[in-house]
Image (tube, rainbow, N blue to C red; front, top):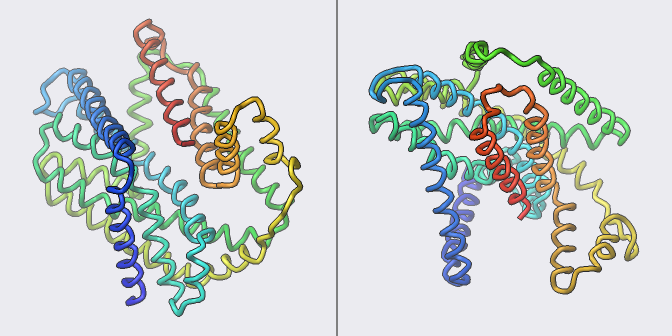
Length: 389
């Protein structure tokens, strides 16, 4: 483990130098990024605070008593925890592939006298940081707004910090195992077999979505019971997201002992997941990396040939330097699997949402809600497009 700590300390020094190097950047650039980040955080906080305030008023009583609004907020936090858990798995699959198999640093570490288990933990920590920092940034205003609106005790904020790390470790371990398994299996398969598997997976996914969105519209008085029934099914004691949400909600109610039990369950599962991932990496990390490295081929195409070669021809109406910047962005997007895969996932979720709009309640056909939903849709599409930058 001494090699692992040496690499971790080196990474920390590199991060410190990068942070210290900010003073050499343009002051305008630093100022714009800082103002945008602070504005986004504050905007998210006030938006979440207004939403929780509306739910508390919808419950019919004050925030100091348990009411229907409290039930809705607890169920929504459970849904949020499960959704974030699933998204973290997909995110870690993509990030782990780039950090463990496509990073140039791995080629040097593989040749060093470092055990493959320690090598995996080195790259795992980097993958965990890349995939989870956005959750900490966007999740903190949500939980702060919830604590302020419900007048939660101070132990609630401490519980958020304690539950965060083990909660993000479990989906990171699942995503890394999936990545290592795919990198170990798929290079051995022929391209027609890989294409058939991908086609079958996409067909099954869209069949499930089609079955889901073709349900008949429910009556107005059946929406709320259906919502409570659907959210109750997500409260499974076998889901780590349920452990995290229940532990945080117990801390919000001042039940420290129950919150500690959920924390220990989540923490023990995270530690066991790390141990299992290390054992799996010891067996299949290096074979998978070797297969992928052996299949790398440098294909050179004549100028103007292929899809990327024709981009420059399509961009001729633009003037320099805009044409050069546009061509560079298109080529980087096409060659970076992390960018276009996340882009496909985000727009896939948006497509499912758009296809399900016809199943919404007639209550949202009022002019006020139509205007609000239209603005939220524009904002969501803008945020997805912002990921391309």
